[in-house]
Every structure is written in C-alpha cells, then in structure tokens.
Image 1: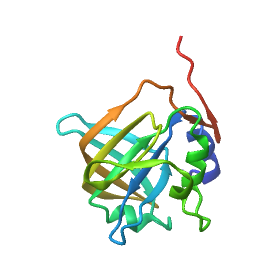
Image 2: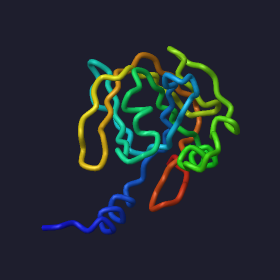
Image 3: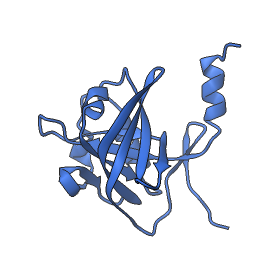
Image 4: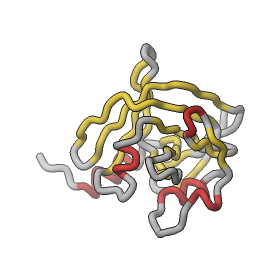
Length: 160
C-alpha cells in the first residue's frame, strides 16, 4: 500500500505539537537555528531527546555536524520567532531575536518556555530526514504557556 504524501501531511498535521527552535554555533562562529516541531524525549537514563531534520534543508549540515546544540521550547506568543527561524531567505533570524549564550556557548532564546542543552549522542537515517539524538547536559523551564502547532496554524493551550 502506498501512502500519498499529501494524505500523510494532512493526518499528521492533526497531531498538535509544541514548537521548538534548535540552535547551535558551527565552526564559523555564527549561530544558526531552525524551527522544529518533531521533538521528543527518548530516554530518562541517560537523559536523551531527539528531533528530526530534513536532509535537504540548507542548514542540515550545521546541525548534523554539531557536537552541542540547544532545543528552545517556544512559549505562547513566540510564533514570530518560529516563523523567522523556519525561513531561509538570507536574513539572519538572530538579528531580530533576543538571545543569550548558554552552556557550552549554545544560543538560548530569550523568553522561551524552556531550553535543553545537548551533546550529540547519535544521528540515524530516517528516509528523507535524519533523526538526531542528544544527551541532555543542562535544562531549565519557566512558568509560561506553550506555543502549539496544529493543522498548519499556531495556537495555545487552555488548562481545564
């Protein structure tokens, strides 16, 4: 049975997810980041997390080769940051985004709901994507609402 890519995207887009921006600093010293919604925990012991990245992405090698990176979990209202880091249009998204240097120099986005500083653990092939696994080195979170993504749109969360 063959699955049509458009059907696959439509159905998987029905799964609400949080939004992250993965950041690193490659050898040239200029920070890079990319919006990622395919983030998950992998293991508690050791503490491992993963995200998936299109192998055709222009920033793929910056992340596939990164020894250290941060996963910035975006808070409600940070959809502009998500959009800036999702685009590849010649504009550096760090120019319009407040950030600080975290553990091992990884960029941490100001106002994020949380951050996870990672050391590369593994990179696995996954079809047209790579599955990048990181060992958690440090982390923190704030008391804020998350930014959610559902069916191609941003939304929020209302506690009941």
